[in-house]
Image (cartoon, rainbow, N blue to C red):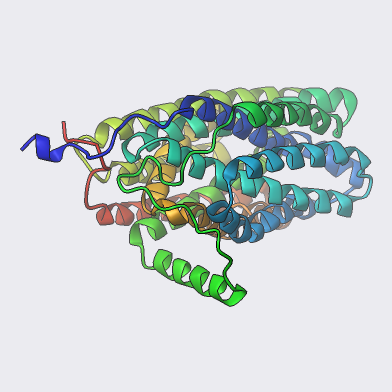
Length: 430
């Protein structure tokens, strides 16, 4: 009986997997450094251009608008073209746009700059997880994606720090110049060291490579619509994606407005970036690592573990977030640290749940549709909505919107876990 349960494919990763994981995690780190520089300098931007909170929120809105609208097209490319050159183009494009930030002297140009940046970052967010999934089998993806997504809190922390420290001394444009250098460096290294695995190489039954023969535009559209229809009736994929969207609403809103919230709560502007960076790095990194570890062990006995860790992560975040937004000043930072730790517990498991829910042949497109949904419902509207509420009442009230979406996320993910019917391939019960 034991022999019958053994997987019929090797659990070893594809050659070059470790190099790919290191390079893509480093590139993801730079990606989030770029993204979180803006919150670190947005009070400087607001002062220079004389704009309102609502207008500051529009910068992030335009970034995520192009981020999500470009995702379906870039996802289609990822399913039909080699991902290595696409990733290199993304890295170069993101760094180039950061360099061009120095030419921005009109607020609307800043909106345009962030809109263009969104296209490059969306592409990276699609191609990298899909490529890593071809290097590693299903039972290892939670662990690998947990490592990959540790770049979020660490990159955010470094972005805050670069924004505050360098921005306060040299102006808000200089941090963007600094962040462009490592992206270009990684792109050059990827040219020589990153390998392109066969699509679905680590799946039990690898998908055939997309055919090179040309299809008519109408046939391509029909194929895309059929793919979307299949995703729409895939409950594992839909509940995980909708749950991620609600978490993204909260995390995006908190990340965009927390520096301003702390400054307006009486914390020194010169220390907010350092404090917030430390909280984000320690809490986020610890939460991501521990959440991935818990899910990996829990998967041995419970096939719903990826969903359950993510659901509990969302629900438990609410009490400390309430204390942070509405409690006394003395409790704000400790409560924020606990909230950041808890919200990141589910980051790796939830991304693994989404990727495991779809076959390799449409994985890039499925990630692209996920990106479209989570940003359309998540961090595209949240900074703007929080800014609107803040202009009419208080920033605390605006941030309170994120509490509701975390509760919704928990409910969706608990329901989604009911559709997980088996352990990942190769994950034998303990």
